[in-house]
Image (cartoon, rainbow, N blue to C red):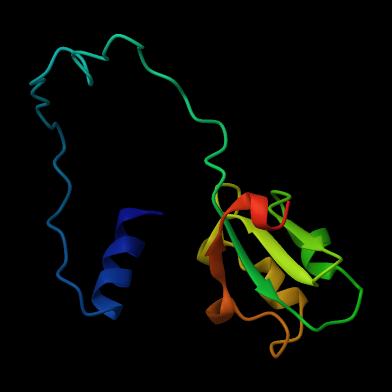
Amino acid sequence: MPFKMFQKYLKKKRLPGLGDPIDNPVIEKRVKKDIPIPGEEGLHILERTRTYMTMVVDCPECKKCIRVCPNDAITINEENRAIIIATDLCEGAHCQRCLKACPPDKFDWKTLRVFKPEQYL
């Protein structure tokens, strides 16, 4: 987002503005590495955090929410009609394509609950 647009956004939301950007900033390096001592086991990158949220829905079998999700974060458990959202894949409020694809009375983020994967998968 351009800086001027960001300033307008802050003003619109009644948040304090930022000063003008510095033309030639001086960067002071204070550490040699981000994590100086990674431990005996080293560092590992987590591909999936395995956190899920669910809601039980009573909707048609159209599955539009699954088709419009750009990250394949949504699945439906056919047995108990639960929508399961993988939170590590879902872009949440940034995307909201699932909300726009479904009728507002069917898909409601306020009814989401966190659960352990073995409950439904």
